Every structure is written in C-alpha cells, then in structure tokens.
Image (cartoon, rainbow, N blue to C red; front, side):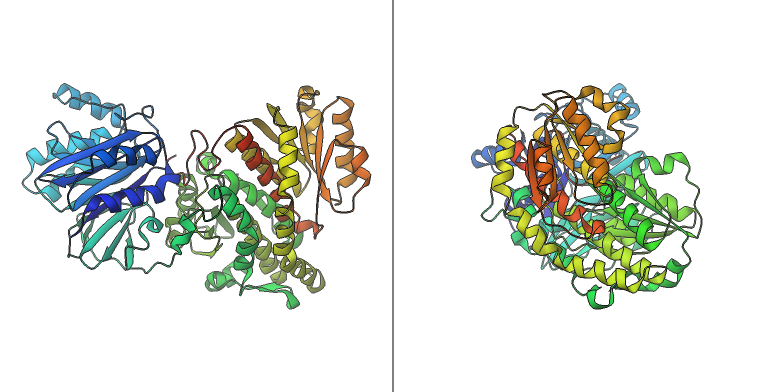
Length: 610
C-alpha cells in the first residue's frame, strides 16, 4: 500500500518520478505528489489518481535532478491535497515520503506541537519531517540526525527524505515496508517496488528491516544497520517485461490479466510437471526435501484471495497427500499463540511477497522452529527471501487490485505441491498420472471459459439490479464461493457473502427472497446431489439461482434460473475452472455499476500495513 519513488542523478527528476508513480498507482490512488530539490524544495500535490497530479504538473513542473514522489492509500487522514505526500517540516527545508504506519505518532505530534511545530496534515507521516528538523538542529552530521530520527519512531516504515542543505542526497530507511535501491550509470533510484523502475536500472539492492541508506549520484549507496554498522549488500539483476504495465488492447488491467490466465498456468507448470510419471519437481524445494519428508503437519498462512487459494490447497493436500493441513488468516496467526514445532511446516501464500501480516506470521513460525515455505509471485520480495524454501508462481506482474491470475497460479502451484508431497507419501502412481494429465489440459479449458464472456455479460445485465448475493459451494467449491463473493464486493460494491452450501440452512436462508440471488457452484462431483438439495431450498423461498456446472449437465436447467456451463475436469482441479466465471461476472457487474475495476474504492494492492 502506497507507492514511493525517489531519483537522484544527472537528469531531470520529474519525468522519472511521474512515470514511476503511474506504474505504482495500483498501490494507492487517493492522492499523489512529487517534490524536487533545486536550490529550494518545490512540491506539487493533488487529490485523486495520478492523472490529477499530471494535470497540475503540466502548468508547474519542478526542475531539478533530485526528487521524491508518492502515491497514497489513506490510513491516517482523509484523501486530500493537504494529506498527500511529500510532507515538509516547519522551515520547508526538509521533505519526506513514507509508507507504513507510525504507531506512536500521536505522542510525537503532541510533544512536537508543544515545542512550537505547526502541522498541516492529519497524517501520521508528517511527524517524521518535524522530528528530522529537530534532530538536524541538535546534530552536526545529517546521517546521525537521520539515525536519531529513526530511533524515535515505533511502527512500520519505508522512508525517503530530502534535505535542502544536502543537495543530490536521498536518505532512506526500511522497517516493515519494502524498499529497493536501483542504479544505472550515475543515476540512483529508490522505490517501493522494483518493477516500477525495471527499465531504468541495471540491478537492484533489497533493503532488509532495520537497514538505512544514503544515495548520491555516481556513488555506491552507503548502507548501514540500526546498530550503525556499515554493510555491503548484494546487487540483483531483475527481469521484467515492461509491457505488463500496459493494458495493450484491453480496457482494464483486470480484463487483461484474466485473459492471461491460460498462459500463466502453463508458465507455472513449465519444467515442473512431468505428467507421464505423475510427478512435480520444484528446484526451490530440493534443499529441504529430506526435512519435508519428516513434516507431520502443514499450516498455510495467507490473507484475502491468497487465503482462499490456501483453502483449496487444504482439500487437495489432505485428500491426496495425506498431510494434516490447517489454513490460518495471517492477521490472526501470531496473536493466538500457535503451537508449532520443527515437524510443522508453515506455508505462506502471497502475490506480492510483502504482505505485512503474512510476513509477521512467517517470522513467528521461524522463532518456534518451524520449516517456513513460500508460494510467492515476486522474486526478491521479503517473504521470498526470508522463507527457508519456496515456489515462484510465475504469474508476472499483476496490476489489477482484485487478484485473478495470481490466484489461479497459486492454486496451480498447490495442485503440483500435492503431487510433490503425495508421491513421497501415499498417492498411487495411477491417480497421480491422472491428475497430472488433467492439469496439462487446464490452460485450454480456461481459454474456452474466457470465450463465455458475452454470455456472462448478458447475465450481469440481467442481474444488475441486485444489491445482495450469496455464492455457494461445497468441498472444493466452498473456497471458490468465498473468493467469488470477495471479487463481486471488491469491484462492484455489491454486498456478497460466500458460504459452504451446507451452512445455508443454519441462518443465511433467512435472507433469501426474490430479490436475493444465489450463484451456486455445482459441478458433478461427489456432493453434487447435496448441492442440488440446497438449490431446492433456495427455490422454495423464491430465490433466483445462477448455477455454474459442467457442460452436458442439462438436468439442472429446469431447477435454476440461469446456467453457466464449463468443461469438466478432475474434481481436485475443478476450482481452477469454476473460479473463472465468478471473475468475469464480477468484472462485468463492476462496469454496469459504473466503477473502475482496476481501482476499487478504499482498496489498494500489496497490503504492507497491519
């Protein structure tokens, strides 16, 4: 959440800063601003998406070769120009940008106000600039002043500061919020996401928590720890196709990313799935394979859509690999004092690899001696670096806030992980081969479902009046019901709830009437007949029903109001197909409600605050 970028070098800073903000907008679009140092610090800010800032910059683009910029997802203070970053101190000689939350900001603000400081925003971030003003006044060294500032902060932060008395220098710090440094020739960059600067830099350095840096043109960054120890960090090359930041022919990133799902599933499987033998190979797990054989319990930790992928994985792994699995909300995991040991593996699932709650869960697991694993999309991300071993999903950069292709690749990775574990345990070769061969067919089957978009658009047109909805499913389809409901409410702002269909009669059925539709996910699986009984309960209360079922299932047509027919597959893999119509339905409904599906209200990508 929130995006930061800074530049110091030999060229004009403003074009880099604006372009970087556009690439980071998925991290926050409440307000944005840039600040450039050229004798004085000139700041331009605007409420709303980056295009509003761009309009202002047409009339007033700051000159200078050192600058910082920020796009905001609001935590403290409403979206407004005053609350937009960068923030200044009283003198106007300091400007800062900040991601994260300063937990002791109220105490600091009160003390600073008593000492005469005047605040101009409601944000927690502004205390940083005023504190830095004081530490500079009391210290001979700017680097020491920056260190003293950080010593007074409690909470999470990624900070970049610019000081008038040190032209061309950027002061950087990380604690719980991602920070990446980049370089090319004499130019130096700092960013919250390496992909935003990928085509401007030759390599990057990932800062870890507690590390600080000083950037100047033509020089290697000076990096030190909170213990004031200077350190060297490894440079990493990054490979990223900058075309992923373009919508190409599509109206929205979400639509583009849904349409990429056949390809990214293939990419996730490539070189890993050996269908003829029913096995999956993960290079990232080989170093811990012997320890994995000793694991007698797996805990999956995740948030949001990744949590629902984990719920699918729970069914897969318990049924076919014989491993006891628990799926935990990462935001709750460490607060309930989990009982784990060295025979427990804790698996984090995350698109960004930076999700604050998931990272905290992994760190808690490590303190208790658990083996930590990751299913992560972003190489070099914090969770990818801090887990003992893991799997990259290869979904490519996902810009749309509502996750689609990342979810599908997570479920694909979990299906292969089931084969990986299962063949080391009790999964018979014939069944494994059957699953693996069906998995190879999934991309083409997803492609065929995506071609149903006109039909699903027509359904959205028919039901655009709805203000509430249930998504229902059993066993493997229950997590898809949860995920389908999440997608609909995220981007169309329609109230939707996902339920296991068997739970309908334990309370939710009270809400059903002719104005409360249900989307029921009911392929012909082992619980199909039971799901039909749940449909009958809804129809007896005059509730409209949309069914998602297999091609060739004509019997259900007479029982429901509308049907989406999709290809059949192995029951374990069915969520990879049933999720697609729910994504398309949410997308089309969002457009009908007049919303931008790429920028859902109050939400942003990559949740790096608790």
